[in-house]
Length: 198
Image (cartoon, rainbow, N blue to C red; front, side, top):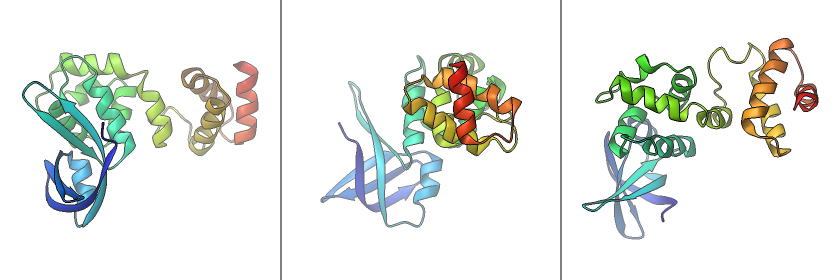
Protein backbone atom coordinates (compact mmCIF):
# COMPACT_ATOMS: atom_id res chain seq x y z
CA UNK A 1 0.00 0.00 0.00
CA UNK A 2 2.79 2.44 0.92
CA UNK A 3 6.12 2.44 -0.91
CA UNK A 4 7.86 5.23 0.97
CA UNK A 5 7.23 8.26 3.15
CA UNK A 6 9.26 11.42 2.65
CA UNK A 7 9.16 14.35 5.02
CA UNK A 8 10.57 16.01 8.11
CA UNK A 9 11.73 13.85 11.01
CA UNK A 10 9.79 15.35 13.92
CA UNK A 11 10.73 12.67 16.46
CA UNK A 12 13.48 10.08 16.51
CA UNK A 13 14.68 7.41 18.92
CA UNK A 14 16.39 4.03 18.43
CA UNK A 15 13.07 2.17 18.13
CA UNK A 16 10.93 4.52 16.05
CA UNK A 17 10.79 7.67 13.97
CA UNK A 18 7.91 10.06 13.39
CA UNK A 19 8.03 11.50 9.88
CA UNK A 20 5.68 14.35 8.99
CA UNK A 21 4.52 14.29 5.39
CA UNK A 22 1.73 16.54 4.03
CA UNK A 23 0.71 17.50 7.56
CA UNK A 24 0.40 13.92 8.80
CA UNK A 25 2.84 12.40 11.29
CA UNK A 26 3.66 8.77 10.49
CA UNK A 27 4.97 6.59 13.32
CA UNK A 28 7.45 4.12 11.83
CA UNK A 29 9.16 1.30 13.71
CA UNK A 30 12.85 1.31 12.74
CA UNK A 31 16.00 -0.72 13.33
CA UNK A 32 19.19 0.63 14.87
CA UNK A 33 20.72 0.63 11.37
CA UNK A 34 18.06 3.04 10.12
CA UNK A 35 18.28 5.09 13.32
CA UNK A 36 22.03 5.56 12.79
CA UNK A 37 21.39 6.79 9.25
CA UNK A 38 18.68 9.21 10.35
CA UNK A 39 20.55 10.74 13.30
CA UNK A 40 21.15 14.43 12.83
CA UNK A 41 19.02 14.64 9.68
CA UNK A 42 15.95 16.84 9.43
CA UNK A 43 14.42 15.31 6.32
CA UNK A 44 14.15 11.62 5.46
CA UNK A 45 12.78 9.27 2.85
CA UNK A 46 11.93 5.94 4.43
CA UNK A 47 10.88 2.88 2.46
CA UNK A 48 7.87 1.33 4.16
CA UNK A 49 6.49 -2.09 4.99
CA UNK A 50 2.89 -2.01 6.20
CA UNK A 51 1.49 -4.77 8.41
CA UNK A 52 -2.22 -5.10 9.24
CA UNK A 53 -3.25 -7.30 12.16
CA UNK A 54 -6.57 -7.75 13.93
CA UNK A 55 -5.44 -5.48 16.75
CA UNK A 56 -3.05 -3.08 15.00
CA UNK A 57 -1.79 -1.43 11.83
CA UNK A 58 1.99 -1.10 11.91
CA UNK A 59 4.45 0.75 9.70
CA UNK A 60 8.12 -0.26 9.53
CA UNK A 61 10.59 2.17 7.98
CA UNK A 62 13.91 1.48 6.24
CA UNK A 63 16.61 3.71 4.78
CA UNK A 64 17.71 1.09 2.25
CA UNK A 65 15.86 -1.24 -0.10
CA UNK A 66 18.28 -3.99 0.89
CA UNK A 67 17.24 -3.76 4.54
CA UNK A 68 13.54 -3.81 3.64
CA UNK A 69 14.00 -6.80 1.33
CA UNK A 70 15.75 -8.74 4.09
CA UNK A 71 13.04 -7.71 6.58
CA UNK A 72 10.37 -9.08 4.23
CA UNK A 73 12.26 -12.34 3.81
CA UNK A 74 12.62 -12.69 7.57
CA UNK A 75 8.92 -12.17 8.34
CA UNK A 76 8.04 -14.76 5.68
CA UNK A 77 9.72 -17.37 7.89
CA UNK A 78 7.17 -19.02 10.18
CA UNK A 79 7.66 -17.87 13.77
CA UNK A 80 9.45 -14.62 12.86
CA UNK A 81 7.33 -11.51 13.36
CA UNK A 82 8.00 -7.88 12.58
CA UNK A 83 9.58 -7.09 15.94
CA UNK A 84 11.88 -10.13 15.80
CA UNK A 85 12.94 -9.22 12.26
CA UNK A 86 13.61 -5.65 13.39
CA UNK A 87 15.66 -6.96 16.34
CA UNK A 88 17.74 -9.10 13.96
CA UNK A 89 18.37 -6.08 11.71
CA UNK A 90 19.24 -3.97 14.76
CA UNK A 91 21.84 -6.55 15.82
CA UNK A 92 23.42 -7.11 12.40
CA UNK A 93 23.81 -4.80 9.40
CA UNK A 94 22.22 -6.20 6.22
CA UNK A 95 25.63 -7.18 4.79
CA UNK A 96 26.60 -8.98 7.99
CA UNK A 97 23.28 -10.80 8.10
CA UNK A 98 23.66 -11.91 4.49
CA UNK A 99 27.08 -13.35 5.35
CA UNK A 100 25.76 -15.09 8.48
CA UNK A 101 22.89 -16.75 6.59
CA UNK A 102 25.03 -17.62 3.55
CA UNK A 103 27.69 -19.22 5.75
CA UNK A 104 24.95 -20.99 7.77
CA UNK A 105 26.23 -19.65 11.08
CA UNK A 106 23.25 -20.41 13.33
CA UNK A 107 25.40 -19.95 16.43
CA UNK A 108 26.01 -16.31 15.58
CA UNK A 109 22.42 -15.68 14.53
CA UNK A 110 20.98 -17.02 17.79
CA UNK A 111 22.89 -14.26 19.64
CA UNK A 112 19.98 -11.97 18.73
CA UNK A 113 17.91 -11.27 21.83
CA UNK A 114 14.81 -13.49 21.90
CA UNK A 115 15.96 -15.73 19.06
CA UNK A 116 16.54 -19.40 19.86
CA UNK A 117 18.76 -21.87 18.03
CA UNK A 118 15.82 -23.65 16.35
CA UNK A 119 14.44 -20.41 14.92
CA UNK A 120 17.93 -19.34 13.83
CA UNK A 121 18.39 -22.66 12.02
CA UNK A 122 14.94 -22.32 10.42
CA UNK A 123 15.80 -18.83 9.13
CA UNK A 124 19.03 -20.16 7.61
CA UNK A 125 17.36 -23.18 5.97
CA UNK A 126 14.56 -21.08 4.45
CA UNK A 127 16.62 -18.06 3.38
CA UNK A 128 20.11 -19.26 2.43
CA UNK A 129 19.21 -19.65 -1.26
CA UNK A 130 17.05 -16.51 -1.45
CA UNK A 131 19.67 -14.34 0.22
CA UNK A 132 22.24 -14.87 -2.57
CA UNK A 133 20.48 -12.31 -4.76
CA UNK A 134 20.66 -9.69 -2.03
CA UNK A 135 24.33 -10.47 -1.43
CA UNK A 136 25.05 -9.78 -5.09
CA UNK A 137 22.96 -6.61 -5.18
CA UNK A 138 24.58 -5.34 -1.99
CA UNK A 139 28.07 -5.96 -3.26
CA UNK A 140 28.72 -8.16 -0.26
CA UNK A 141 29.05 -11.79 -1.30
CA UNK A 142 29.68 -14.27 1.49
CA UNK A 143 33.15 -13.92 2.98
CA UNK A 144 35.68 -16.23 1.40
CA UNK A 145 33.35 -17.03 -1.50
CA UNK A 146 35.12 -14.81 -4.01
CA UNK A 147 38.91 -14.80 -4.25
CA UNK A 148 40.73 -11.57 -3.41
CA UNK A 149 40.64 -9.23 -6.37
CA UNK A 150 37.66 -10.96 -7.97
CA UNK A 151 34.88 -9.12 -6.11
CA UNK A 152 34.34 -6.22 -8.52
CA UNK A 153 34.54 -8.50 -11.54
CA UNK A 154 32.09 -10.91 -9.89
CA UNK A 155 29.46 -8.21 -9.30
CA UNK A 156 29.55 -6.84 -12.85
CA UNK A 157 29.65 -10.28 -14.47
CA UNK A 158 26.75 -11.56 -12.33
CA UNK A 159 24.66 -8.52 -13.26
CA UNK A 160 25.44 -9.08 -16.94
CA UNK A 161 24.50 -12.77 -16.81
CA UNK A 162 21.20 -12.14 -15.04
CA UNK A 163 20.36 -9.37 -17.53
CA UNK A 164 20.98 -11.92 -20.28
CA UNK A 165 18.22 -14.05 -18.75
CA UNK A 166 20.16 -16.69 -16.83
CA UNK A 167 18.99 -17.53 -13.32
CA UNK A 168 20.91 -15.82 -10.54
CA UNK A 169 21.61 -19.10 -8.74
CA UNK A 170 23.08 -20.83 -11.80
CA UNK A 171 25.05 -17.72 -12.82
CA UNK A 172 26.41 -17.32 -9.29
CA UNK A 173 27.64 -20.93 -9.11
CA UNK A 174 29.27 -20.88 -12.54
CA UNK A 175 30.85 -17.47 -12.04
CA UNK A 176 32.37 -18.44 -8.72
CA UNK A 177 34.14 -21.41 -10.29
CA UNK A 178 35.37 -19.29 -13.22
CA UNK A 179 36.79 -16.59 -10.94
CA UNK A 180 38.27 -19.15 -8.55
CA UNK A 181 40.21 -20.66 -11.45
CA UNK A 182 41.35 -17.24 -12.71
CA UNK A 183 41.20 -14.52 -10.00
CA UNK A 184 42.64 -11.87 -12.35
CA UNK A 185 40.05 -12.46 -15.09
CA UNK A 186 38.33 -9.48 -16.76
CA UNK A 187 34.58 -8.97 -16.57
CA UNK A 188 34.11 -9.67 -20.28
CA UNK A 189 36.14 -12.86 -20.13
CA UNK A 190 34.33 -14.01 -16.97
CA UNK A 191 31.00 -13.56 -18.75
CA UNK A 192 32.27 -15.41 -21.84
CA UNK A 193 33.63 -18.33 -19.82
CA UNK A 194 30.41 -18.53 -17.82
CA UNK A 195 28.27 -18.50 -20.96
CA UNK A 196 30.18 -21.54 -22.20
CA UNK A 197 29.26 -23.44 -19.05
CA UNK A 198 25.66 -22.29 -18.60
